[in-house]
Length: 186
Image (cartoon, rainbow, N blue to C red):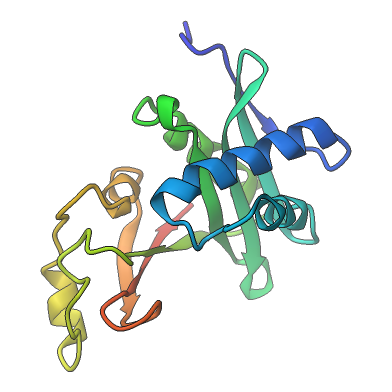
């Protein structure tokens, strides 16, 4: 039995109420953890609306009719690969398996479309891993191979969901603020 009465389904472009709820969720959750990601409700709404484009996947999780999670996928490399972007789970529902269920639903859709890989970038802009706040050059891969979590960075969530670290872009978000690349075969 599911204690949250969780329903995982595609977000339909005609359901304006759920689109707005999803945008509100994205804006609200990221405003506390990464305020520059979607700094206004309008930017969050634009992100949700873009998720209906060609080669895109948009999946929501609802609990008792309320949107509590969302994951998107973006087709790349002629359909062989999808980028997981974005994923969000409402704060009271985090660490309850909802993010994992959203990833599993995305994997199902990606496989059904014939893709082989899902990848993502997970930024560290606030010193949550050992590869943040330092000069990664010249031995970038050596430093990456010794990565460890300092403060609840989500890369460990992705590791638990079968993703591997496949690279890093130093200074992607400014000096000492890298983007950690992860991927998974589906």
